[in-house]
Length: 194
Image (cartoon, rainbow, N blue to C red):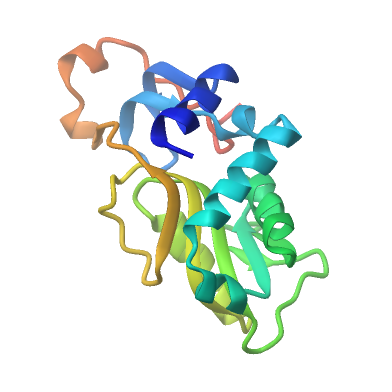
């Protein structure tokens, strides 16, 4: 899939939003990608996962025997990546603020894991998920995501295969341009406060 085709999927599902958004990374942006909306259609989610799988080199794919994704955002795409690769998919979650495997999920020592996210901006959550996977005995040999919002700048410590890399600017709170600051910020993601 090309970048235009991927963004077309986001637009078709009304998942590419414009306004003033406070991202889960703490940064601000005029654009927000609502991956839950783009993934709510199972056929679209399957197509996107297959497209990500095509980006992963064959020799890496052959080694992967588990997919692990961080809850909440990575659940659907992680499940679809497991289907695309023909391996089990599970997730880590933060019941006490730190990612961990729960719900009977476990990894065998040396399991070769693909860590899958929906969107990577700073890579903080991805690195935390990778650390939890390794502490549980898995060996993360690669990471993947639908979107790399860092435009290729993020370093996860493992090979990283995003479907597309975007350069929607993000801003630290003290760097928000006046035109964006004039719009009330909303936090649309799964970690938004109710």
